[in-house]
Length: 417
Ligand SMILES: Cc1cc2nc3c(=O)[nH]c(=O)nc-3n(C[C@H](O)[C@H](O)[C@H](O)COP(=O)(O)OP(=O)(O)OC[C@H]3O[C@@H](n4cnc5c(N)ncnc54)[C@H](O)[C@@H]3O)c2cc1C
Image (cartoon, rainbow, N blue to C red; front, side):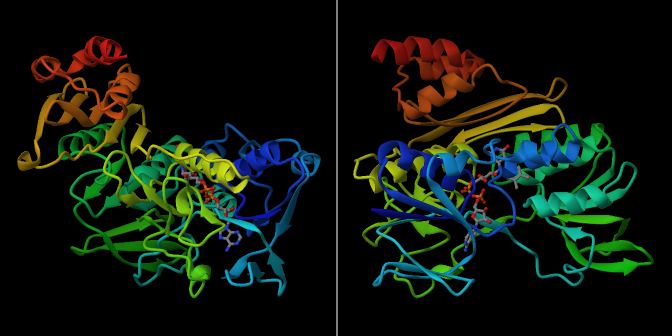
């Protein structure tokens, strides 16, 4: 059996290792398009801060790790998949045959279509090469404008702030982290960042960037001009699926897969950021681009590729973010559901201490939550949502005091168990 894995990020690597454990005799080939050993993008902020070197980002530290496991690697970009002939064409001109194929190509940052986006020193922060460029120009004291304050944007912001640059964040939404945080929490994060000396401009966007001497001038929609040395673009991502055009593999925002990570084509699977997989509990297929989901999906895909039978319960949206010292989290259907579908919520906030909890219910089941400054309830929130635990009278107890999550979990989940 020949297993071909396109992509050597966390999903590709974990799939290759899982396959090797389950199928000692099978051939495994892992392709990677970048000129680096397999590495973790989520380690790049630590590289920017200086707490690790480049080798600290490598997913496996032993240079011979994959060779020892009999996992072949090739540096090449897949350019097309012929599902009839069961082969993948590469930018080297070669075609590689497969019996089982895993697509684990991840996502690529969007480049907003604005004048000046291709200027030097307008950089993304997605690859090891991007990080090298940022290290060269975002020196302490440099002025940096960052476009985008989403989940990844806030992680990059934290690293840049720690480098001692002077930072302005420009976010189109009316608050920070708008696709992960409620209005209340997003607004509090903005206030927190401003108190830490970061300028935050919400509800606007960079309309153009132009050279000004050896620096840059970023012009906002309303006409304000921000002089800076570097512009960082963190305005969302798109799945790397272009090479699948004409393959017959069904895609929407990403590669569409079922609970087994199987695509619509027999023998072809997808995992990681590129996969659009069923979410918990709605079953709708979404991209949940975080590393724990990527590796869970990779294990499931590899189990099925090697003849087993494994299925996800569905990926639960679960994001924990440390924004310059303020820990924020959101879970499940944090934006809630309408009252006519049984939706209700409770929100408590303390702007002085930056503590915030909002809980979302459908009937008497917790379906989502957003928190700031509260980290001791993470396990209870996850357990209540994933277990679809019926709260009974504990729903009212939580409405009266949402911080009693652990009591509710112990009383309801354990009773059910
Ligand atoms: C700065 C930053 C910070 C982050 N922080 C966190 C965090 O704190 N927590 C968290 O959970 N997640 C974080 N993430 C997200 C996390 O890195 C991703 O969820 C994870 O990398 C997904 O793994 P993957 O294997 O699916 O994709 P990737 O890691 O993107 O790997 C895909 C690989 O496929 C290769 N490839 C693409 N196209 C082709 C092709 N056609 N042919 C061959 N190879 C190809 C790519 O070069 C790449 O090596 C962060 C991301 C960034 C950029």
